[in-house]
Image (cartoon, rainbow, N blue to C red):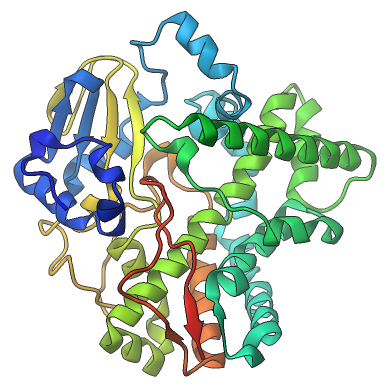
Length: 407
């Protein structure tokens, strides 16, 4: 399904099951006909070329703002929802200097040296997970392997006790609707509010425990920052722990699932990767480019400015279609083909500028080590249905709900 022209583009259009299943023909159409598409009735500018999206994510005058068309009453109604209100305290939705302050409290935990030191642990987790299901001969790779692996890793980093992990490993997954540019249904919002309150209560309790019994983990480091010169408020503390937990696993699950689906749809590339595991680091970059687990990101103009030479007014909402940019033929040769030998890839999947993803290196490492273990331990692995997987109902975060397979 495609819009007949770029002017017909809307987020309702790309929310249909047909487009969620394969948004790339629509992205191509947008790039070719209107790579910078204004939608004044929605106060939006939609970008789909690599040049424009790269400029947007690096732009210092594009940040996070509320839609200026909303009244104070409308804003108050929105923030009466715990899920919406809690988002405002997360670094992802903050601008400098608050964003700089919050990011500075956790950035050291994700530096290259610390991430590399986790490689052996990631591999061990992958081996343990495969040990638990290898004899079954079939099952859902998402629930058995792809979901629990990054959840366990981020639980390790945060310091979530072993006694509490089963709920996180086997529990519900972030569906991305909170950060979609389309309005949530009342049922979705109610579910999001309930989940946010439950999560907040759990992490508040864990923070209180760490105040009494500190440990060598990220939650303790954040708790200690709470009172150090007022660096962190109570709301910021729990909101950003929730952000780190969600961001620390959801997109990595999707990255690995999308990679497995792409490889099984392109068996020649799967064979290349199995024959030469040394290709894995650049293959992960190609997976990020080819079918990004983060499809888009949003910004707002903090002042009258321009993006790649295009003037935009203060308050304009800018949507950068990162997945469209990652298939821009002006930057990538044969962009619609999966090529695990492709070199010099610079996908925009992790954003850019001050909001560049903190966990980018960790996600790359987890995907590389997990896929290597999976291919080594389950050489006969085959997906049951590569043509009609069930995709999560979100347009911001792209991933499959399940990957039934045999081995």
